[in-house]
Picture 1 (cartoon, helix red, strand yellow):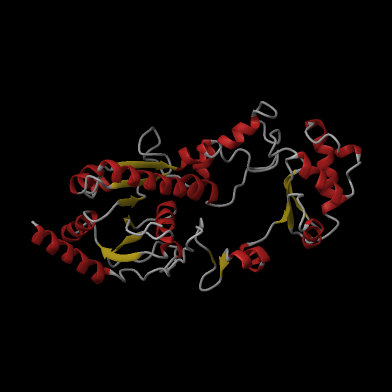
Picture 2: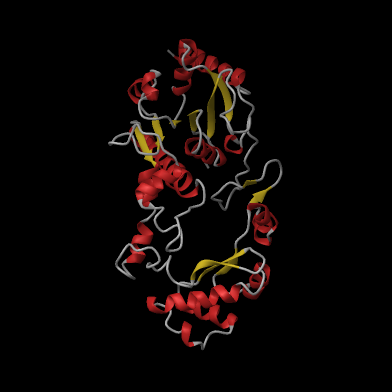
Length: 368
């Protein structure tokens, strides 16, 4: 889908390289600039999954000759992605003004936690800090328990990488119409707050306060996970009344007085405790079979390794164990199936890319 689009990624960690991987999955030519002679980021493998589908060139951005190589690459690019703190690229002589002087149509993607501007722009932070401040972490637990969200998913990936991907694509579309590039200021604190708008809409239909455990999605007995007899978990979220009725029917509770008033917050605590006790009597897989094939909106909570073997994953090819465990490209299209390529070794394509730069420079000279 993105054939013909070239993205230059400056090596980093977290959401910026994830966004670049997403674009590579969809067919963009993503050239990641790895540090010359450098080792992988501590704790990261030499060829991480998020580098899949990219080409690698090794450069030292403190070396003027290598900086000149990067600038030559930018002349051929639709976009650049970097994930440093504000001001770092400027110190390297590669800020937006410099890059737009080289390529006016370039979309300059910047990924940060706190944003390019504001009182916290230069402060350090991580996923949990960003979503804590944005409000997105507030509902991530039951009342009285410390909020805990799945690592990276709400902040780094949801509020960060995916918003950067959308910003890059929007910028490229605009640049192709106008010839003018732009700077994409993708901040995790912004994106994770923006993702709250659906929940804010649902709040308008329920209790009008921010108390944890009081909204339609984090308070009711029909919207939570339950521990089962084997220590595993089952997820329940039958919001609509017709699905709630199916849920109760399969538990034999359709006429039980404790469950009749689905949307009455006063009835939730007692109904929840009864479900806590009920689900604890059987294994997760037992309950999964009870609700299999129904519209009760109940599903087992699987680990990624378990998800690999689930019939849905097998049918759609969601997870792959061909190499490191990883999920397939998404979204899908009716006329093609994105097939991610392997991650490159660091600097693997340096000679190839340098040859392309020389060929491009020669062609420009002949044209001139």
